[in-house]
Length: 230
Image (cartoon, rainbow, N blue to C red; front, side):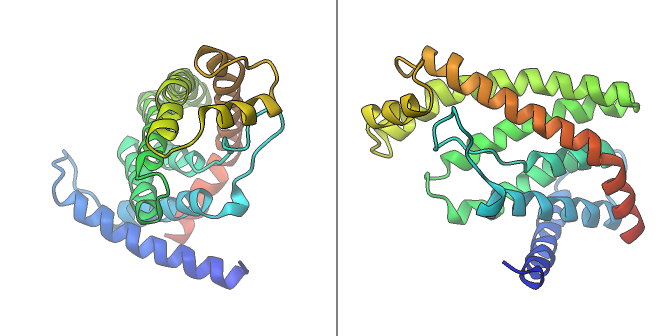
């Protein structure tokens, strides 16, 4: 994908995302009116999040973890939007990304649903806390709260729901999943709790640490850039 293709993709997603957000805001009652700037800026962050979620170049597996677990950092734009414009903006970023991905699902929508939940439980608590404590300390505490909730929730769901879904619904072999896991980490004796402690928990913790560091590093510069452009 060259720069022109990427630019066209961003513009297309901004228009689609803006239309989705505008349509949904007609049904949401808030104390303050939702401005065009809010919709446009949120749609821009939704475009960035969608690209990080869709484009294979921005996803990768890492050693010591099975290949079916991939790092992707689409929560970063949602967190930045949440800090800049509030929890509702973070919610819309995550929702737009999920809705755009759904027609391309390869997991009957289940993968998208759990990614939606994972992103929400990280971004929304962080944005809510930061809304009342707008400082670096407030951001750090908010992200820490989201980190704990997300790591526990995502690790439990992956270990005890998603693996079973792939085995019983998608037709994956339990032995095959275990073999892939043991090839990356021989300490995993079986799926379930061993998978939770040796794979899911460290994988999600490491991914979230990277997401949080990127958010803290990029937040102010990207926020200021969007404020100047839109």
